[in-house]
Amino acid sequence: MKLKLLTIVALYCLPVVGHSLSLHDRPLDELYTAADAIVLAQVRGVSADCKKSNRCWGYRLSFDIKSSFKKSARAGKEVEVCSEIPLEIGVEYIVFLHPYSFQPISGMKKCAMLLPRDGAFERRADGTYRVNSPEGAISVNAHENVYSTNAILEPRFDEKIAELSRQQTKED
View 1: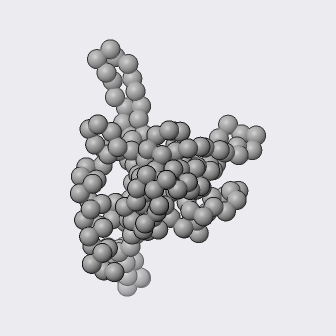
View 2 (view 1 turned 60 degrees about the vertical axis):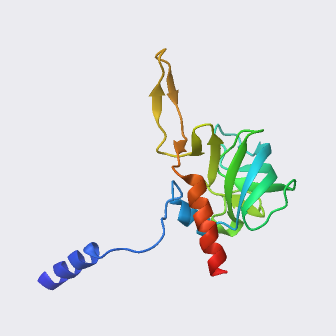
């Protein structure tokens, strides 16, 4: 009995190495490695099939690509991806696109690429923000208006992407 208990405690205490199973707020290096392409793109359209429900389980987003950070994508090209999150039409995002087989969306027809839940970032005047973060904040302004946001600041975003790109180039 003591041996079984000791084995269970030892297994529990061993460090675990691997990748996050959650698709929320994975580190940038993990997102970068898993992504087939990383692009700056403007949302051109959003469509969804909500199947008689108040909640949509999947979206088709069409983007106009502005530039590419990983794998060359032609600027000006339009691409359609599947996503579990809607993004705002007309807004530019940096998106980490995965192969659709990475995590298919239930009920969605197959798309060429998938935008994972934690794979969209938006540049604002004061930095780059991760969109759709469960760690979003509630803030109160001077007029006591309450605002909720699902975006959190991603410190040193551009520096981290540049470093990951240099590492990728060295490996290739």
